[in-house]
Length: 477
Image (tube, rainbow, N blue to C red; front, side, top):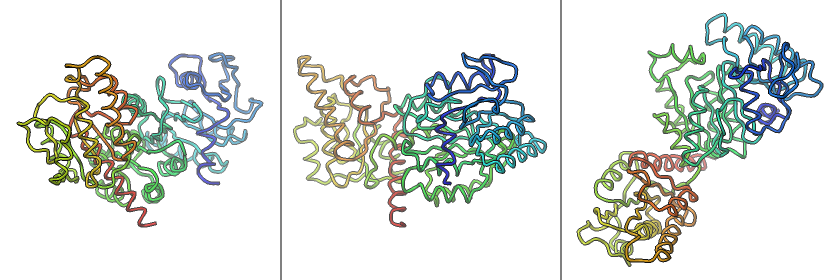
């Protein structure tokens, strides 16, 4: 049985038993059921508690053995010392998947480690796969199954594997602000049975997942993760952030999820060889995932830049620092770029970057320049300021203004959608100077506005890096 079949009862269960269900608000055994109901889970929920009769409108059973119907998944939130017996009952019932939210195992020391080994041994003898222990649950968009994330979770194409449950909620909210959503979230916990490599292999075969994001503190089996990465990297990007770079804080990761941090140089080399995209800042996980789900991959690393003054300088400098090129425009293309455009006489010649030198210009003028640059075969991607529209409203009627904005939006969105080249923008003042029509068009085309030129260049560099990884794996196959 492959990993997709083994994990189906966990990520697409037809029924869920909550062992340790509670009628007390804000307890785990209550929150889990409420989260499933709120998310619209369509399967059957069986609360398990020997002292309750009804919880959140559902009839309660003393044990899973008392439930008359089959159960796919057990969610366990009881005292650690009670988990072995609960696992035996799950096996007797024929349950094939479990999520062990309960803490008090290997992360607490030798006694907890022994208890964790006992639970794992019971599960493996009985043929049940489990997430955790010491985790905050999972989210599966395909099943409307939410065991962990607060509030409404936007559905999308990012699969997030994390050794921190807290980061799941943070990431989901931040992804929504970027116009992205999750296909799944896995709080891996201590990884006593299933580990990051298993989840990675599962998401590699998941048609709803386009990008995999990982937060890791340590590896249980580095070789296994490496092999899983090699299988997926040529098909889907894998972005990874590893905490515990410094050996001096190894005790922190050990007490959090029983993880051994390992030597960072070895991990970095493994990422390069496996085809993982490693990021050094936590929120860069989101920026990298967002751009990879919303923009096409570039054919190379040559960037076209449009802006004004210092923005052009910073963007060009940052691009080169990140391994990209900013090629000078050929003479015949300089004329092509500014044709039908009243280019400011005091501005430098548009050699790339194209610098408007602080002059008033319209969104249509900017979009026209960008579209022409995108047509050049030696420009692989575009980075620009968020189109400015304050000058679009002078000397024309409201109808004419709207026509200009619609045309600007068409030219801008054609770059990724028709010309197949990625676009990212910089809005140092947010997008306050952009018309709502332009903003909506950008969002529909997956064009994201970043707050700083460095963030915009880093996002583009992510696209370049994964395009190179994909080409490398294609040659090797």
